[in-house]
Image (cartoon, rainbow, N blue to C red; front, side, top):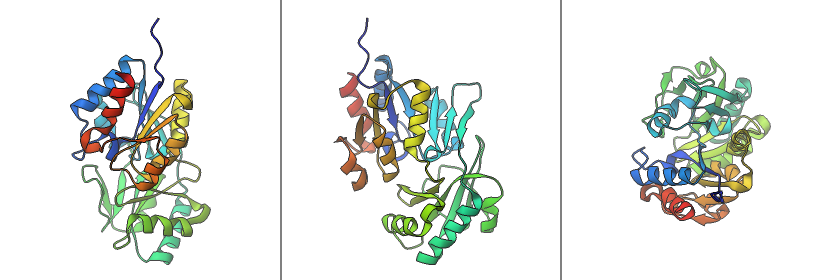
Length: 270
């Protein structure tokens, strides 16, 4: 009888982690994921992207099973027909609007965007908001009130001058209990529903799969991956990772441009 792998679940962030800078998954990374699968391990994507932002990639990878999206606000089943949401937590729109007002009272005017709820939710952006990943679709609105037309799972915030660490720190101080604040990538400070993060999404998906935290190996690059690290048995930071995540990691691999995920999977499962 084959020996089960030490890690039954490979949890990977996407941007800055599994995806190369050109937004693709390399042949080496695909082969390493296949190697892990042949040893009996499942792959779980845990991303800040909403469901519409991952659908093409899921098809490209022939990915099946649950996916954690929207910083943990969504758990999506990629295996059932056209796919369906298993779990979705929305951010109170009045609280979100109030949170933006409090942030602006501290740092001046910001540009905002939202990811709408639902498997087909749209990303809406204010004029002047620059998408950190221009490959992801977004619709420009002419007024902030239009951001709240439908339920949302998160708000993305950018400042014309402040750096990400400064903006995230100011937002945490200003927002209080209205929302959770996280830094998800360069130019990406986000407000999520209180108590919702990649760790809660990972825990829900792992429970569906019947896999305990000690059997999870997690890969990430930004502070929004910290809660995922806390719920995993082995934590791997990318070579391009934020210092905060590197400090919390069990090991640091090569960058996403150099197939850092594949390097570790080849060692663990080869």
